[in-house]
Figure 1 (cartoon, rainbow, N blue to C red):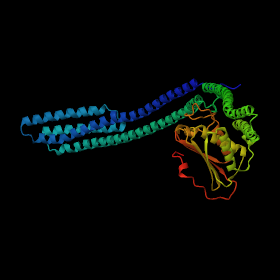
Figure 2: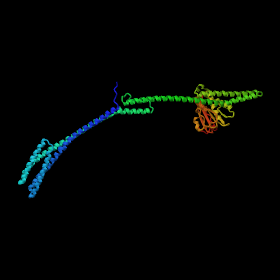
Figure 3: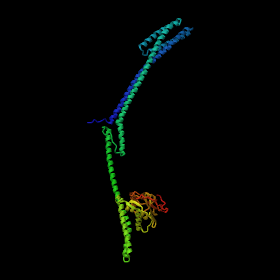
Figure 4: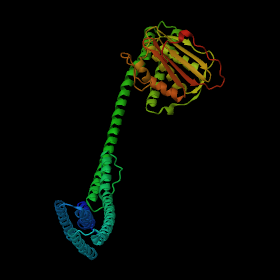
Length: 523
Protein backbone atom coordinates (compact mmCIF):
# COMPACT_ATOMS: atom_id res chain seq x y z
CA UNK A 1 0.00 0.00 0.00
CA UNK A 2 1.46 3.34 -1.08
CA UNK A 3 1.98 5.79 1.75
CA UNK A 4 0.10 9.05 1.32
CA UNK A 5 2.44 12.01 0.81
CA UNK A 6 2.40 15.01 3.07
CA UNK A 7 -0.20 17.57 2.16
CA UNK A 8 0.75 21.07 1.00
CA UNK A 9 -0.52 22.50 4.29
CA UNK A 10 1.69 20.10 6.25
CA UNK A 11 4.72 20.91 4.07
CA UNK A 12 4.21 24.65 4.42
CA UNK A 13 3.71 24.26 8.19
CA UNK A 14 6.97 22.34 8.44
CA UNK A 15 8.77 24.98 6.39
CA UNK A 16 7.36 27.82 8.54
CA UNK A 17 8.25 26.00 11.78
CA UNK A 18 11.73 25.37 10.43
CA UNK A 19 12.17 29.05 9.57
CA UNK A 20 10.85 30.05 13.01
CA UNK A 21 13.30 27.73 14.78
CA UNK A 22 16.05 29.00 12.49
CA UNK A 23 15.30 32.57 13.55
CA UNK A 24 15.40 31.53 17.23
CA UNK A 25 18.72 29.69 16.80
CA UNK A 26 20.18 32.59 14.85
CA UNK A 27 19.07 35.05 17.54
CA UNK A 28 20.45 32.86 20.35
CA UNK A 29 23.81 32.47 18.64
CA UNK A 30 23.96 36.19 17.96
CA UNK A 31 23.13 37.01 21.60
CA UNK A 32 25.68 34.47 22.82
CA UNK A 33 28.37 36.02 20.62
CA UNK A 34 27.38 39.49 21.78
CA UNK A 35 27.64 38.34 25.42
CA UNK A 36 31.28 37.38 24.83
CA UNK A 37 31.92 40.81 23.38
CA UNK A 38 30.10 42.41 26.29
CA UNK A 39 32.18 40.46 28.81
CA UNK A 40 35.40 41.61 27.16
CA UNK A 41 34.12 45.17 27.01
CA UNK A 42 32.94 45.01 30.64
CA UNK A 43 36.47 44.24 31.82
CA UNK A 44 37.74 47.32 30.04
CA UNK A 45 34.81 49.44 31.20
CA UNK A 46 34.61 48.23 34.80
CA UNK A 47 38.27 47.56 35.59
CA UNK A 48 40.89 48.96 33.30
CA UNK A 49 39.35 52.32 32.52
CA UNK A 50 38.63 53.18 36.23
CA UNK A 51 42.02 51.89 37.37
CA UNK A 52 43.77 53.85 34.64
CA UNK A 53 41.80 56.96 35.63
CA UNK A 54 42.63 56.48 39.33
CA UNK A 55 46.32 55.88 38.65
CA UNK A 56 46.36 58.91 36.36
CA UNK A 57 44.93 61.01 39.17
CA UNK A 58 47.53 59.64 41.58
CA UNK A 59 50.33 60.43 39.18
CA UNK A 60 49.06 63.96 38.65
CA UNK A 61 48.54 64.60 42.37
CA UNK A 62 51.84 63.10 43.53
CA UNK A 63 53.73 65.09 40.94
CA UNK A 64 52.50 68.35 42.49
CA UNK A 65 53.85 67.56 46.02
CA UNK A 66 57.59 68.38 45.45
CA UNK A 67 56.65 71.83 44.15
CA UNK A 68 54.37 72.45 47.15
CA UNK A 69 57.14 71.23 49.51
CA UNK A 70 59.67 73.68 47.99
CA UNK A 71 57.14 76.53 48.21
CA UNK A 72 56.57 75.76 51.91
CA UNK A 73 60.33 75.92 52.60
CA UNK A 74 60.62 79.26 50.81
CA UNK A 75 57.61 80.81 52.56
CA UNK A 76 58.68 83.71 54.77
CA UNK A 77 55.56 84.73 56.60
CA UNK A 78 53.30 82.58 58.73
CA UNK A 79 50.32 83.33 56.49
CA UNK A 80 52.09 81.93 53.48
CA UNK A 81 53.06 78.81 55.38
CA UNK A 82 49.45 78.36 56.54
CA UNK A 83 48.19 78.67 52.95
CA UNK A 84 50.69 76.12 51.72
CA UNK A 85 49.84 73.73 54.54
CA UNK A 86 46.13 74.03 53.67
CA UNK A 87 47.03 73.27 50.07
CA UNK A 88 49.06 70.22 51.12
CA UNK A 89 46.19 69.05 53.28
CA UNK A 90 43.80 69.37 50.33
CA UNK A 91 46.20 67.46 48.11
CA UNK A 92 46.44 64.72 50.74
CA UNK A 93 42.66 64.45 50.67
CA UNK A 94 42.68 64.15 46.87
CA UNK A 95 45.41 61.48 47.03
CA UNK A 96 43.45 59.59 49.66
CA UNK A 97 40.32 59.76 47.45
CA UNK A 98 42.26 58.48 44.43
CA UNK A 99 43.74 55.66 46.55
CA UNK A 100 40.26 54.75 47.78
CA UNK A 101 38.93 54.71 44.20
CA UNK A 102 41.74 52.42 43.13
CA UNK A 103 41.19 50.09 46.11
CA UNK A 104 37.53 49.64 45.10
CA UNK A 105 38.53 48.27 41.71
CA UNK A 106 38.99 44.52 41.35
CA UNK A 107 42.73 43.81 41.09
CA UNK A 108 45.01 40.84 40.76
CA UNK A 109 47.53 40.01 43.58
CA UNK A 110 50.53 41.58 41.84
CA UNK A 111 48.75 44.90 41.35
CA UNK A 112 47.56 44.73 44.95
CA UNK A 113 51.13 44.13 46.17
CA UNK A 114 52.55 47.01 44.14
CA UNK A 115 49.79 49.33 45.32
CA UNK A 116 50.57 48.36 48.95
CA UNK A 117 54.24 49.20 48.44
CA UNK A 118 53.27 52.53 46.92
CA UNK A 119 50.99 53.33 49.85
CA UNK A 120 53.75 52.52 52.39
CA UNK A 121 56.40 54.52 50.55
CA UNK A 122 54.01 57.43 50.04
CA UNK A 123 53.28 57.57 53.76
CA UNK A 124 57.01 57.51 54.42
CA UNK A 125 57.47 60.38 51.95
CA UNK A 126 54.72 62.42 53.54
CA UNK A 127 56.20 61.95 57.03
CA UNK A 128 59.56 63.18 55.80
CA UNK A 129 57.95 66.16 54.08
CA UNK A 130 56.27 67.11 57.35
CA UNK A 131 59.61 66.82 59.20
CA UNK A 132 61.39 68.90 56.51
CA UNK A 133 58.80 71.66 56.68
CA UNK A 134 58.62 71.63 60.50
CA UNK A 135 62.37 71.63 61.10
CA UNK A 136 63.26 73.62 57.98
CA UNK A 137 65.57 70.95 56.71
CA UNK A 138 66.87 70.73 53.12
CA UNK A 139 64.61 69.25 50.43
CA UNK A 140 67.00 66.44 49.73
CA UNK A 141 65.90 64.74 52.93
CA UNK A 142 62.58 63.74 51.33
CA UNK A 143 63.60 63.26 47.71
CA UNK A 144 64.72 59.64 48.13
CA UNK A 145 61.38 58.69 49.66
CA UNK A 146 59.50 60.52 46.88
CA UNK A 147 61.57 58.77 44.21
CA UNK A 148 60.83 55.35 45.72
CA UNK A 149 57.06 56.05 45.90
CA UNK A 150 57.01 57.53 42.40
CA UNK A 151 58.93 54.56 41.03
CA UNK A 152 56.46 52.12 42.61
CA UNK A 153 53.51 54.11 41.26
CA UNK A 154 55.14 54.15 37.80
CA UNK A 155 55.57 50.39 37.87
CA UNK A 156 51.93 50.00 38.90
CA UNK A 157 50.82 52.39 36.15
CA UNK A 158 52.92 50.64 33.49
CA UNK A 159 51.57 47.27 34.56
CA UNK A 160 48.01 48.61 34.50
CA UNK A 161 48.47 50.15 31.05
CA UNK A 162 49.95 46.92 29.70
CA UNK A 163 47.09 44.90 31.17
CA UNK A 164 44.55 47.38 29.75
CA UNK A 165 46.22 47.06 26.31
CA UNK A 166 46.02 43.28 26.53
CA UNK A 167 42.36 43.49 27.55
CA UNK A 168 41.67 45.83 24.63
CA UNK A 169 43.37 43.50 22.18
CA UNK A 170 41.51 40.55 23.68
CA UNK A 171 38.25 42.50 23.30
CA UNK A 172 39.06 43.13 19.61
CA UNK A 173 39.73 39.43 19.09
CA UNK A 174 36.46 38.53 20.80
CA UNK A 175 34.62 41.07 18.64
CA UNK A 176 36.20 39.69 15.44
CA UNK A 177 35.38 36.13 16.49
CA UNK A 178 31.82 37.18 17.26
CA UNK A 179 31.50 38.80 13.82
CA UNK A 180 32.83 35.67 12.12
CA UNK A 181 30.55 33.49 14.17
CA UNK A 182 27.49 35.66 13.40
CA UNK A 183 28.45 35.85 9.72
CA UNK A 184 28.85 32.08 9.56
CA UNK A 185 25.52 31.64 11.32
CA UNK A 186 23.82 34.04 8.88
CA UNK A 187 25.44 32.23 5.94
CA UNK A 188 24.27 28.85 7.17
CA UNK A 189 20.82 30.29 7.86
CA UNK A 190 20.75 31.73 4.32
CA UNK A 191 21.66 28.34 2.88
CA UNK A 192 18.93 26.69 4.92
CA UNK A 193 16.39 29.34 3.87
CA UNK A 194 17.46 28.97 0.22
CA UNK A 195 17.10 25.22 0.52
CA UNK A 196 13.65 25.65 2.02
CA UNK A 197 12.67 28.05 -0.76
CA UNK A 198 14.01 25.67 -3.41
CA UNK A 199 12.00 22.87 -1.84
CA UNK A 200 8.85 25.01 -1.76
CA UNK A 201 9.44 26.18 -5.33
CA UNK A 202 10.08 22.72 -6.74
CA UNK A 203 7.47 20.80 -4.83
CA UNK A 204 4.70 23.42 -4.55
CA UNK A 205 5.15 26.72 -6.39
CA UNK A 206 6.51 25.45 -9.73
CA UNK A 207 3.91 22.65 -10.07
CA UNK A 208 1.11 25.11 -9.26
CA UNK A 209 2.40 27.66 -11.80
CA UNK A 210 2.80 24.92 -14.43
CA UNK A 211 -0.67 23.61 -13.68
CA UNK A 212 -2.13 27.13 -13.97
CA UNK A 213 -0.37 27.63 -17.31
CA UNK A 214 -1.73 24.34 -18.65
CA UNK A 215 -5.22 25.24 -17.44
CA UNK A 216 -4.90 28.55 -19.29
CA UNK A 217 -3.94 26.68 -22.46
CA UNK A 218 -6.87 24.33 -21.97
CA UNK A 219 -9.15 27.33 -21.58
CA UNK A 220 -7.80 28.53 -24.94
CA UNK A 221 -9.05 25.23 -26.51
CA UNK A 222 -5.57 23.70 -26.76
CA UNK A 223 -6.72 20.17 -25.98
CA UNK A 224 -3.39 18.52 -26.87
CA UNK A 225 -1.67 19.85 -23.74
CA UNK A 226 -0.23 17.19 -21.42
CA UNK A 227 -1.14 17.31 -17.72
CA UNK A 228 1.69 16.49 -15.32
CA UNK A 229 1.61 15.63 -11.64
CA UNK A 230 -1.31 13.20 -11.76
CA UNK A 231 0.74 10.60 -9.86
CA UNK A 232 1.20 12.87 -6.83
CA UNK A 233 -0.68 12.06 -3.64
CA UNK A 234 -1.32 15.57 -2.37
CA UNK A 235 -3.57 18.50 -3.24
CA UNK A 236 -1.56 19.26 -6.40
CA UNK A 237 -2.08 15.70 -7.56
CA UNK A 238 -5.81 16.03 -6.96
CA UNK A 239 -5.84 19.30 -8.92
CA UNK A 240 -3.86 17.70 -11.76
CA UNK A 241 -6.27 14.78 -11.93
CA UNK A 242 -9.20 17.22 -11.96
CA UNK A 243 -7.54 19.16 -14.80
CA UNK A 244 -7.01 15.87 -16.65
CA UNK A 245 -10.72 15.13 -16.36
CA UNK A 246 -11.44 18.67 -17.56
CA UNK A 247 -9.10 18.16 -20.52
CA UNK A 248 -10.71 14.84 -21.45
CA UNK A 249 -14.13 16.47 -21.25
CA UNK A 250 -12.86 19.35 -23.39
CA UNK A 251 -11.48 16.85 -25.93
CA UNK A 252 -14.82 15.02 -26.02
CA UNK A 253 -16.62 18.34 -26.36
CA UNK A 254 -14.30 19.42 -29.17
CA UNK A 255 -14.78 16.10 -30.95
CA UNK A 256 -18.54 16.34 -30.56
CA UNK A 257 -18.42 19.94 -31.75
CA UNK A 258 -16.31 18.92 -34.73
CA UNK A 259 -18.70 16.08 -35.52
CA UNK A 260 -21.64 18.46 -35.27
CA UNK A 261 -19.79 20.95 -37.46
CA UNK A 262 -19.11 18.24 -40.02
CA UNK A 263 -22.73 17.17 -39.95
CA UNK A 264 -23.81 20.80 -40.28
CA UNK A 265 -21.38 21.24 -43.17
CA UNK A 266 -22.72 18.09 -44.83
CA UNK A 267 -26.27 19.33 -44.37
CA UNK A 268 -25.23 22.72 -45.71
CA UNK A 269 -23.59 21.08 -48.71
CA UNK A 270 -26.67 18.98 -49.32
CA UNK A 271 -28.86 22.06 -48.99
CA UNK A 272 -26.59 23.94 -51.37
CA UNK A 273 -26.68 21.00 -53.75
CA UNK A 274 -30.47 20.92 -53.59
CA UNK A 275 -30.58 24.65 -54.19
CA UNK A 276 -28.14 24.25 -57.08
CA UNK A 277 -30.24 21.50 -58.62
CA UNK A 278 -33.35 23.60 -58.17
CA UNK A 279 -31.62 26.55 -59.77
CA UNK A 280 -30.36 24.36 -62.61
CA UNK A 281 -33.84 23.03 -63.16
CA UNK A 282 -35.30 26.54 -63.19
CA UNK A 283 -32.53 27.78 -65.49
CA UNK A 284 -33.00 24.82 -67.76
CA UNK A 285 -36.71 25.47 -68.06
CA UNK A 286 -36.07 29.16 -68.72
CA UNK A 287 -33.30 28.43 -71.20
CA UNK A 288 -35.21 25.69 -72.95
CA UNK A 289 -38.34 27.81 -73.27
CA UNK A 290 -36.31 30.63 -74.73
CA UNK A 291 -33.91 28.71 -76.95
CA UNK A 292 -36.42 26.22 -78.34
CA UNK A 293 -39.11 28.81 -79.01
CA UNK A 294 -37.41 30.28 -82.08
CA UNK A 295 -36.64 27.04 -84.00
CA UNK A 296 -40.05 25.66 -83.11
CA UNK A 297 -41.58 28.90 -84.40
CA UNK A 298 -39.60 28.53 -87.61
CA UNK A 299 -40.75 24.91 -88.06
CA UNK A 300 -44.36 25.79 -87.27
CA UNK A 301 -44.32 28.78 -89.62
CA UNK A 302 -42.94 26.82 -92.56
CA UNK A 303 -45.28 23.92 -91.83
CA UNK A 304 -48.29 26.25 -91.86
CA UNK A 305 -47.08 27.91 -95.06
CA UNK A 306 -46.59 24.51 -96.70
CA UNK A 307 -50.11 23.45 -95.64
CA UNK A 308 -51.77 26.67 -96.79
CA UNK A 309 -49.86 26.84 -100.08
CA UNK A 310 -49.63 23.13 -100.82
CA UNK A 311 -51.27 23.56 -104.24
CA UNK A 312 -49.15 26.56 -105.30
CA UNK A 313 -45.67 25.60 -104.05
CA UNK A 314 -43.13 24.65 -106.65
CA UNK A 315 -40.62 21.90 -106.07
CA UNK A 316 -37.84 24.43 -105.48
CA UNK A 317 -39.93 26.37 -102.96
CA UNK A 318 -40.90 23.15 -101.23
CA UNK A 319 -37.24 22.07 -101.08
CA UNK A 320 -36.21 25.49 -99.73
CA UNK A 321 -38.80 25.38 -96.97
CA UNK A 322 -37.87 21.79 -96.14
CA UNK A 323 -34.23 22.89 -95.91
CA UNK A 324 -35.14 25.64 -93.47
CA UNK A 325 -37.15 23.16 -91.40
CA UNK A 326 -34.14 20.85 -91.29
CA UNK A 327 -31.88 23.74 -90.26
CA UNK A 328 -34.26 24.52 -87.42
CA UNK A 329 -34.30 20.85 -86.41
CA UNK A 330 -30.50 20.78 -86.59
CA UNK A 331 -30.42 23.88 -84.39
CA UNK A 332 -32.68 22.19 -81.86
CA UNK A 333 -30.47 19.10 -81.95
CA UNK A 334 -27.42 21.31 -81.38
CA UNK A 335 -29.19 23.04 -78.50
CA UNK A 336 -30.00 19.69 -76.91
CA UNK A 337 -26.38 18.60 -77.28
CA UNK A 338 -25.20 21.89 -75.77
CA UNK A 339 -27.57 21.54 -72.84
CA UNK A 340 -26.38 18.02 -72.16
CA UNK A 341 -22.77 19.16 -72.42
CA UNK A 342 -23.46 22.08 -70.08
CA UNK A 343 -25.04 19.77 -67.53
CA UNK A 344 -22.05 17.45 -67.64
CA UNK A 345 -19.69 20.40 -67.39
CA UNK A 346 -21.48 21.79 -64.33
CA UNK A 347 -21.46 18.35 -62.71
CA UNK A 348 -17.70 18.07 -63.26
CA UNK A 349 -17.89 15.39 -65.98
CA UNK A 350 -16.68 17.48 -68.90
CA UNK A 351 -13.76 15.13 -69.43
CA UNK A 352 -16.15 12.44 -70.62
CA UNK A 353 -17.09 14.62 -73.64
CA UNK A 354 -13.62 16.01 -74.34
CA UNK A 355 -12.35 14.39 -77.55
CA UNK A 356 -9.63 16.67 -78.97
CA UNK A 357 -8.49 16.48 -82.60
CA UNK A 358 -6.97 18.89 -85.05
CA UNK A 359 -9.80 21.21 -86.13
CA UNK A 360 -10.07 24.27 -88.31
CA UNK A 361 -11.28 27.07 -86.06
CA UNK A 362 -12.44 29.43 -88.82
CA UNK A 363 -14.99 26.89 -90.01
CA UNK A 364 -16.33 26.51 -86.47
CA UNK A 365 -16.63 30.30 -86.17
CA UNK A 366 -18.50 30.55 -89.49
CA UNK A 367 -20.85 27.74 -88.51
CA UNK A 368 -21.61 29.46 -85.19
CA UNK A 369 -22.28 32.75 -87.02
CA UNK A 370 -24.54 30.98 -89.53
CA UNK A 371 -26.59 29.31 -86.79
CA UNK A 372 -26.92 32.58 -84.89
CA UNK A 373 -27.99 34.36 -88.07
CA UNK A 374 -30.72 31.80 -88.62
CA UNK A 375 -31.95 32.16 -85.03
CA UNK A 376 -31.87 35.96 -85.13
CA UNK A 377 -32.28 37.08 -88.75
CA UNK A 378 -32.10 40.73 -87.71
CA UNK A 379 -28.66 40.30 -86.18
CA UNK A 380 -25.90 42.31 -87.88
CA UNK A 381 -22.83 40.02 -87.83
CA UNK A 382 -19.63 41.35 -89.42
CA UNK A 383 -17.34 38.55 -90.59
CA UNK A 384 -13.65 39.57 -90.42
CA UNK A 385 -12.23 36.06 -90.35
CA UNK A 386 -8.82 34.94 -91.57
CA UNK A 387 -8.99 33.50 -95.08
CA UNK A 388 -6.39 30.82 -94.52
CA UNK A 389 -7.02 27.82 -92.26
CA UNK A 390 -6.45 28.36 -88.57
CA UNK A 391 -5.71 24.97 -87.02
CA UNK A 392 -6.04 24.23 -83.32
CA UNK A 393 -6.01 21.06 -81.26
CA UNK A 394 -9.33 20.75 -79.46
CA UNK A 395 -12.87 19.43 -79.27
CA UNK A 396 -14.95 20.85 -82.10
CA UNK A 397 -18.25 20.42 -80.23
CA UNK A 398 -17.03 22.22 -77.11
CA UNK A 399 -15.38 25.00 -79.13
CA UNK A 400 -18.60 25.41 -81.10
CA UNK A 401 -20.43 25.81 -77.78
CA UNK A 402 -17.91 28.44 -76.66
CA UNK A 403 -18.25 30.51 -79.84
CA UNK A 404 -22.01 30.07 -79.92
CA UNK A 405 -22.33 31.36 -76.36
CA UNK A 406 -20.08 34.37 -76.99
CA UNK A 407 -21.82 35.33 -80.27
CA UNK A 408 -25.27 34.72 -78.76
CA UNK A 409 -24.41 36.94 -75.77
CA UNK A 410 -23.08 39.67 -78.08
CA UNK A 411 -26.35 39.65 -80.06
CA UNK A 412 -28.58 39.30 -77.01
CA UNK A 413 -27.05 42.22 -75.09
CA UNK A 414 -26.80 44.55 -78.13
CA UNK A 415 -29.58 46.82 -79.40
CA UNK A 416 -31.41 45.77 -82.56
CA UNK A 417 -29.28 46.39 -85.62
CA UNK A 418 -26.09 47.06 -83.67
CA UNK A 419 -23.12 45.39 -85.40
CA UNK A 420 -21.32 42.45 -83.85
CA UNK A 421 -17.82 41.99 -85.24
CA UNK A 422 -16.11 38.57 -85.25
CA UNK A 423 -12.39 38.62 -86.09
CA UNK A 424 -9.83 35.82 -86.19
CA UNK A 425 -6.09 35.79 -86.79
CA UNK A 426 -2.90 33.90 -85.98
CA UNK A 427 -0.51 35.55 -83.53
CA UNK A 428 2.71 33.59 -83.33
CA UNK A 429 1.95 30.25 -81.73
CA UNK A 430 -1.64 31.19 -80.87
CA UNK A 431 -4.94 31.43 -82.73
CA UNK A 432 -7.04 34.42 -81.59
CA UNK A 433 -10.74 35.08 -82.04
CA UNK A 434 -12.33 38.37 -80.97
CA UNK A 435 -16.10 38.95 -80.59
CA UNK A 436 -16.89 42.65 -80.23
CA UNK A 437 -20.29 44.27 -79.70
CA UNK A 438 -21.67 47.72 -78.99
CA UNK A 439 -24.27 46.68 -76.45
CA UNK A 440 -24.96 47.45 -72.80
CA UNK A 441 -21.45 46.49 -71.69
CA UNK A 442 -20.40 45.18 -68.26
CA UNK A 443 -20.13 47.44 -65.18
CA UNK A 444 -16.73 47.78 -63.56
CA UNK A 445 -18.02 46.22 -60.33
CA UNK A 446 -19.11 43.06 -62.19
CA UNK A 447 -16.09 42.59 -64.44
CA UNK A 448 -14.13 40.41 -62.00
CA UNK A 449 -17.06 38.01 -61.46
CA UNK A 450 -18.59 37.54 -64.92
CA UNK A 451 -16.87 34.15 -65.28
CA UNK A 452 -18.30 32.82 -62.01
CA UNK A 453 -21.02 30.21 -62.08
CA UNK A 454 -24.59 31.58 -61.87
CA UNK A 455 -23.37 35.17 -61.70
CA UNK A 456 -25.13 37.74 -63.87
CA UNK A 457 -24.33 41.39 -64.30
CA UNK A 458 -26.23 44.00 -62.33
CA UNK A 459 -27.51 45.60 -65.59
CA UNK A 460 -29.02 42.41 -67.13
CA UNK A 461 -32.39 42.45 -65.39
CA UNK A 462 -35.19 41.76 -67.88
CA UNK A 463 -32.89 39.83 -70.22
CA UNK A 464 -33.26 36.05 -70.24
CA UNK A 465 -30.14 34.20 -69.09
CA UNK A 466 -28.94 31.45 -66.74
CA UNK A 467 -25.61 32.85 -65.57
CA UNK A 468 -23.66 29.75 -66.67
CA UNK A 469 -22.71 30.70 -70.24
CA UNK A 470 -19.49 32.59 -69.51
CA UNK A 471 -18.59 30.11 -66.76
CA UNK A 472 -18.84 27.30 -69.37
CA UNK A 473 -16.79 29.37 -71.81
CA UNK A 474 -14.00 29.93 -69.27
CA UNK A 475 -14.00 26.27 -68.21
CA UNK A 476 -13.78 24.98 -71.81
CA UNK A 477 -11.05 27.48 -72.72
CA UNK A 478 -9.04 26.40 -69.66
CA UNK A 479 -9.56 22.78 -70.70
CA UNK A 480 -7.95 23.65 -74.06
CA UNK A 481 -5.02 25.44 -72.28
CA UNK A 482 -6.11 28.75 -73.73
CA UNK A 483 -7.07 32.14 -72.31
CA UNK A 484 -9.91 34.62 -72.60
CA UNK A 485 -9.64 38.36 -71.96
CA UNK A 486 -12.53 40.75 -71.38
CA UNK A 487 -12.55 44.40 -72.32
CA UNK A 488 -15.72 46.30 -71.59
CA UNK A 489 -17.26 49.64 -70.71
CA UNK A 490 -20.82 50.08 -69.57
CA UNK A 491 -23.14 51.31 -72.36
CA UNK A 492 -20.17 51.27 -74.81
CA UNK A 493 -19.99 47.52 -75.41
CA UNK A 494 -17.85 44.48 -74.69
CA UNK A 495 -14.97 42.68 -76.36
CA UNK A 496 -14.04 39.07 -75.63
CA UNK A 497 -10.69 37.85 -77.01
CA UNK A 498 -9.93 34.17 -76.72
CA UNK A 499 -6.60 32.59 -77.56
CA UNK A 500 -5.88 28.92 -78.23
CA UNK A 501 -2.56 27.18 -78.94
CA UNK A 502 -2.02 26.64 -82.66
CA UNK A 503 -1.52 23.04 -83.72
CA UNK A 504 1.02 23.99 -86.41
CA UNK A 505 4.47 25.52 -85.92
CA UNK A 506 4.15 27.45 -89.18
CA UNK A 507 3.93 30.88 -87.54
CA UNK A 508 3.24 33.95 -89.67
CA UNK A 509 2.95 37.67 -89.09
CA UNK A 510 -0.18 38.46 -87.07
CA UNK A 511 -3.06 40.22 -88.75
CA UNK A 512 -3.28 43.84 -87.69
CA UNK A 513 -6.66 44.74 -86.22
CA UNK A 514 -8.10 47.92 -87.72
CA UNK A 515 -8.33 50.89 -85.36
CA UNK A 516 -12.09 51.06 -85.68
CA UNK A 517 -12.41 47.55 -84.20
CA UNK A 518 -10.80 48.54 -80.91
CA UNK A 519 -13.03 49.62 -78.04
CA UNK A 520 -11.97 52.47 -75.79
CA UNK A 521 -12.12 50.37 -72.62
CA UNK A 522 -10.16 48.92 -69.75
CA UNK A 523 -8.65 45.50 -70.44
